[in-house]
Length: 342
Image (tube, one colour):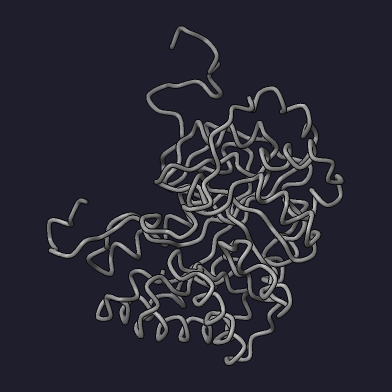
């Protein structure tokens, strides 16, 4: 296991020692290209994806697969940040460059802002971050406070989770909860109990990274239940199909949480195709892959579906602070299937 060169304690990735790993299905080959026609004409909204860690190829593939809008939650970027300025630059990128970059591939970009649970444990820095968060949560396109909650379920994580719940109440924004990868059921129940204790309407709270063990309680208490289709560590889409078959589409949404790890930004359209194969109705698919996310995060007042439902013209020569996605005279939309790279 690698150690941070400035620290002597292990810093495991977000999926190590995860209890969900025991659910990893045996690999089977079902060619995605063979099933694209099943979702032709469908629109998708990914309410949890970390595009700062993804490539332009990902954006192009997402657009071609029908993803028209997304939400990028503020999160842990793989190693601890060491100063307040790194948080400022990161938050600024979520409402600046990354939003612009997404627009250049025909995808509407929103975000949620928050101090992630892992870095809440650095209390001196966390205190500084809490001071600047109000500068960002009121910006255009910010649709919630998130992703916040528990990782190791420490007192510091609870402290800053509670403070951010109050911040969300003051700003009248939905809350996006990250449930822990270890001892998930306990952490999920604790997250919901604290949210209710702070007087939040559960219909304003999206509880993320659910599994079969947590979904019933989340739905029974009136929260939104989000599921992450992430290889081996969270949910596979065959399991997701069974969840939707059992519980129906109400207050359930699917996301990819694609980030710097081994993940799939096409998890939603692939899951939609699998649902279609398994006989789930188009309306149910629409709700769990598109509409429910809009309904939940739309409470922010920041989502106008006319911005993305009919598509919009893209000018890839446009610039943001003098920079475009085209480098050194590149032409827009290169042909990816060509052997020759011009």
